Length: 308
Image 1 (tube, rainbow, N blue to C red):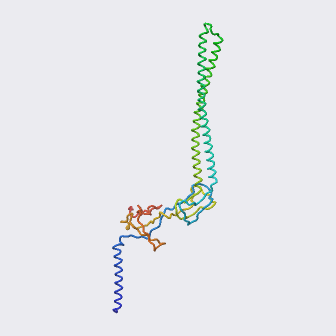
Image 2: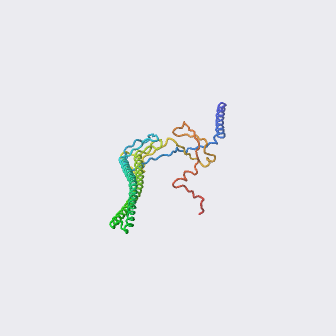
Image 3: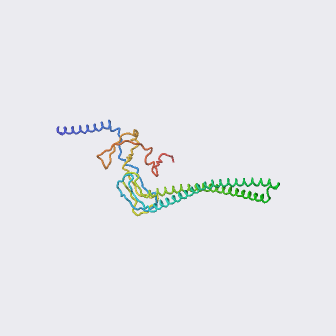
């Protein structure tokens, strides 16, 4: 072999050895402390947007792959029925409140009637006392002949009339008091109806607000199923939003690779779509079990489980 060829071969072998030593040194000093995998996927909490009402879609304002911000209007449902429900609920509430005011006014008036009834009872009792006193005096003077029998009879009749007037005034007063109890019960009933009417109004207003469906998060629209004029039931799927925040990478490693992995450790992510732009991250957490264990039919390797 010529000397020049030997020299070139020696240089080539030396370079190969140096490169191998460099790779070996890099692995020993740094590479052996890192684990890598190509079995990794970007994950995120995809939000499925549904209708909370049964109604016809009036307008869809977004398209697939369109970016939306949180709060943006996505879908508008036909709201005529819900607007009418709000008006009916408001009218019912106004009626109940008017009835409540009338009942309260009658209760106030009834208090005045009770006061007047009590005054009437007192006046009739005073009249009864006076006529009874006159009757007693006349009866005492009848035997000596100072008072005629006709006068005694007249005073007795007046006393009986006064007594009946007292009884009537007391009965009227008792009736007025019972009317107060009835009005108080009616006020309680109306208060309950007003509370129900307010609840119905709040529900009607809530349904009306739900006729406009807004984006719960920011992200990209995907799998849009909503179409103009389409009738949807409550809970029907409309579209999905892929978040542009709060995303992560789920990486699958072998069991022999995770022995020294801990949350918080540094990680470098290289995406196939951006191979020249590595992204720095950190280990958030480690799964408690492999993904296969959470599948619908988890694997069950029966080898060695029993002896036939």
